[in-house]
Amino acid sequence: MIDVNELRKGVTFTMDNELYKVIDYQHHKPGRGKAIIRTKLRNLRTGGTIDKNFTSGDRVQDIRLDHQTVQYLYSDGEFYYFMDVETYEQFPLPDAVLEDAKPYLVENTEIELSSFEGERLDVELPITVDLKVVEAQPGFAGDTAQGATKDVTLETGLVLQVPLFIHEGDVLRIDTRTARYVTRV
Image 1 (tube, one colour):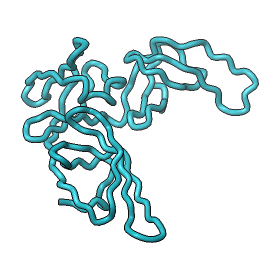
Image 2 (cartoon, rainbow, N blue to C red; image 1 turned 180 degrees about the vertical axis):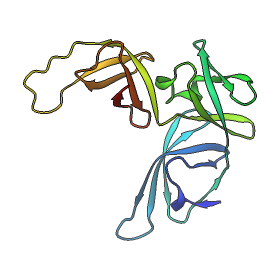
Image 3 (cartoon, rainbow, N blue to C red; image 1 turned 60 degrees about the horizontal axis):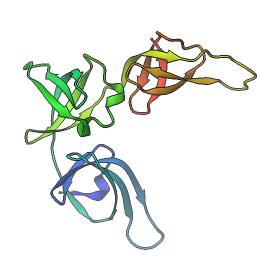
């Protein structure tokens, strides 16, 4: 059991026989009374998110997840197929497990897969991924006082704001935590 004051982004725990991962965390101390810990939690089995407030002193049951490195192979529209890089075992994962990761998945991308008691629950992307630009409007630098940007579409369907000098065919490094352009590769 851990105290809710120890909850941070990325911590996993069980509550009401469900597995949750902390997506967002805020500690609020009113003038009088106990502190309130506001959290946004993602159910690791269903993919749904909830907002939950705890009061200081509450406790939750923490869990330890197993991690393995897997390589993304392909998607058939319903499932995403991966391969364990150590045993070469191939297995599918449902759409709900990969909700936030889908815009960054290209073939042969290696990611960390988290599981609990043999149940595959969550994926952790690398900090940056390299994606190719498939559609970019021409950029015209008009009278701009600050850096001008334009929208581009990447090979996974992700649409981003990038500087005007980016063209179709360029490969961009994208930060998966913030969904922002980092550099041209």
